[in-house]
Image (cartoon, rainbow, N blue to C red; front, side):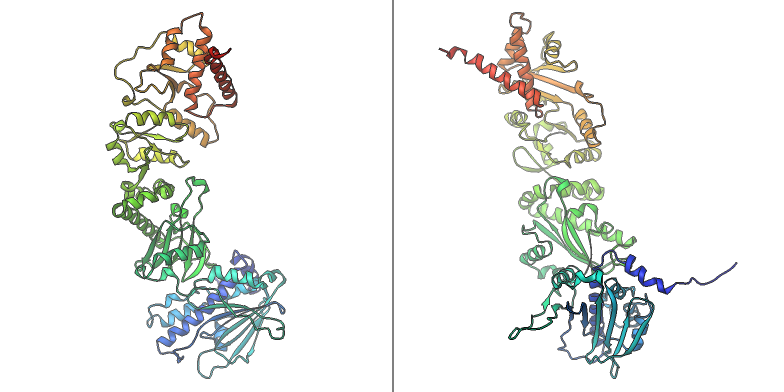
Length: 620
């Protein structure tokens, strides 16, 4: 058996880093500022431990200069700095992390070493993504240290010498390549750094180097691009409603105020801080777009990483900061492990607690939120059974009386649901005739009118076997009709089938309690759901497959129906029978769904004819 050591061709390393390690070129700015923040954080910790003698009033900062004339970007900090030996150790050894070495050395002296951002020792090399040459000038905090200079043009060779840098810290100069010239735009660079480093704990200033100042012209003030103490790092009891709203407007550029929010703060078994906002959501799921920004030690990592954020929460907006995230080398993606799953479970529990708390403590306010948060809650229940189990008592349904009730409240109070059947409305305008029939008998239905409601209904029925959902035009509840058997006239059904040219149409006479409705169409709930499923999967079911489920119900208490019944067998009034039958059918269909163009045209023409007949006696 032969054994050996893997060999790496060092001349291939930088091209790989430049092309494949990071997904976006602008990452270099994040990495260099993160390294500068680390350098200052290390020095602060050494000072706290008595390992460094730095004045207490020292002003720490990271400064970035854009020198467009010389095609240079300069990143400078007044942090820990490096000696020549440390440059050789941390810079010339690719993937040797100074942050990791620091944490290992001082792990017994500080509890907060994990506040240091870098871990992999590769971030510095992202600078070669946009540079032909990179230069380092650095001076260590150590007494009697000599400043060091290092430069490299992107190959495996570098040069080192003493530097004339007189102040503590590190200055990195990028000589920008042709492919990176877009980053010499100071406004673009500020935008990039605001995105990634807008909340790092050290002030970051970005300024432009003016080639020549005009006489009397004052140099431009540097612009600080970050907030060093973001709201999510503070205790919730120190944050006001205005603080939460201002952060929301700043981060998401959404001028509409959020409905409410959850302040996350957990220290064990992992550290997680953040704020989740419930925005005013649109009712149609396909048009909803949330945004949860993920941070690592106040450095922006990515939007909506699904491994840690439950999928249904991607409809929300928020910020989350977790130093314990198991990130990959590029700090852009998570590595799956048990911690990630625990985080996801914790966030889901906090959401459930918030919703249940609002429901119990401030029901009126919760009712007011419902129309906006309903899509989020329903989607979450469908995606996570545990969430449904936790909040099912807080799920509301808006009724045709414009009230918000729970399922238990609805089935208890509504006489039409004594058998646990819940009647619902998908289009209040189209189904207004059915709604009025219900209201006339003191009954209500619930509004379920979004694309999400069809799967939500099926989901509920699978976990609540006692509950059955019927659309308001799926059946006639006993409460809407007079009791007793109704005699069905012989020959009426085949006659109407012939007139309406529908061989499978079912026809029934029901003496409804209202005289305002002449006819209605019923389609069984099972058939409707099969049709909806067919549409969902591209209409793969044969057309007309469920035509036999359509039922035309004629109100036996309506005068027009009584006339039809009296003249149905009259040969002399055959035309009148046809006219009445067609019109009753179209009137019923209009409350069921929009009429096709040809059928609507015929309905209008027939309506005109009926009006002419009705007003014939007024002619001179």
